[in-house]
Length: 556
Image (cartoon, rainbow, N blue to C red; front, top):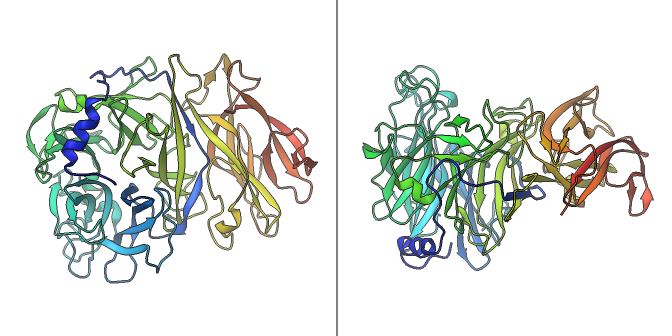
C-alpha cells in the first residue's frame, strides 16, 4: 500500500472529490451492474488459509503482501495463526512453504505457551489493516476458550469460543507485531455454557476523522433475541486507534470494550424495504461514489453474497442505516460453515483494490475490484478450504440495468481424464486422489454470464427465468473421477446438487448480447460440459452430443 505521510491527510484528499451520498435507506442502486468474472483457485485445499477476511498490503511497485489465516505451521503456536504471503499482485498469494515469500505464523494464539494476547489464546486472525506514518495497524479477530474451558485452556470447542478484536502495530510491513491492545469485547453470553460469546470478526474503514469498525454479534441476548449474526459498529479517531466507542442507537460514550451497542439496520432496495440487521462485516470503500459497501453471507431471508451500501458521511450521524442491494453478488443455496457441506460453502467474502491492495475501489482508476472468498465444495472438509479469487467488473449507467449481477461460466479441461467440465466456481475436485492441479487448464474462459437472484422464481426482461444447478455424480467416473453436470431446475438421478449457479432465459433476451447454451455429453466417456455449440464442437470438431438446451445467457 503506497501511502505517504498520514492516512488522515490521504483519505481527506480523496474525499474532497468524492460525491456526497444520501444519508438514507434508499440509495439509488438500479443503474449498477456487476460482472463477476472467472473464478480461480489461488491456494489449493489446505489447513492454513481462508478462515479470515483476506487482506493485502502494497510493499512497493509490483510487490504485495497478503494475509490469510487458519491453522498454524508447527506445534508451538497452535491452534490458529495468520500467514503472510508475498507476490507480484494482489491476487498472487501462490508462494509455497517453506520459501522466502511465505512467512509463517506472523500472528498466533499459542494456547500451550505464551499467547500474543491473554484474551485470545486460541488464535489470531488478521482481518484488515490500515497504514499511517510508516506503521501498519492490524485489526485482528481473537478467540479464547469459553468460561468452562478456560481453566484447562481447551480450544477444541470453537462453537463456544469468546470473540474479541485486538489492535496490533508493525513497523516491518506485517512480519512482526508489537504487543496488542484489546479494542472490542462484549459481555454478550459471556457466562453461557454453550454458543459463542463476545464480539468480533470486525473489519476497518478509514474516514476523514474516524476509523469505522464493523463487527459481528455472535450470540442472542435476553434483550435482543435476534442478535445472532447481526452487524455492529464502532469508531475511533484516526489519531487514537486504541480508543473505540460503540454505536448504540447513536454515537455516545459506550466503550469498545464491554460497552453496549445496537444492531445496524439495512433495508432491501426492491420496493419492500424489508428490514435486516444481518449485513455482514466485510467493509470496502467505493471511493468515486463516496459509499461504504458491506459484504455478507447468506441468511434465512437472502441466499447469496449480500451487498449493502451507505454513504461514508452517514456513518458519522446518529441514524446509521444501509441500503441492501436486491441481488446477490453470487447466489448460493444457503450458508454452510461445516465439513462436507450440504451445498458449496462460500466463506468470508472480501473486496480488495487490485491496484493498491486496500479495502476500496475507484471506478475512475480501475473498473474492477478483486472478490476473495473461502470455497468449500461438498466433498471437502473445513481443513480443505480453497482460497478463491475473481475480478468483478463494475458498470454504472444512466438507466436501470436488468439483470444487475452476472456470474461467469467457465469450461476447463482435465487432460489426465480427457474430461471437460463447466462451472461458475474454481476447482470442483479438491480432495485426493482428485488432484485440483489437474483442472488448471482453462479451455473457455467465459462461455457467458448467468444472472443472479435470491428469489426462487425470478423474472427479467419480461421472462420467467430457468434455474441452473451444478451437480456432481455420486458414482465416480471416468477412471474413478466424478462427473460434473450443469442442468436445469434439479439434478439428475445419482447426482447431488453442489450449488445454484444462476438462471437462464427460455428465449433470447430482448436487450444485451446473449448466447444459447447446451448440456453436452462426451462421445468418449459420457461426461458433461456446457457449450454454445449445438453440436458440441471444440475447435471445429464435434466431440459430443447436445442432450438439451439450457436456455440463453448474457455475454459482453
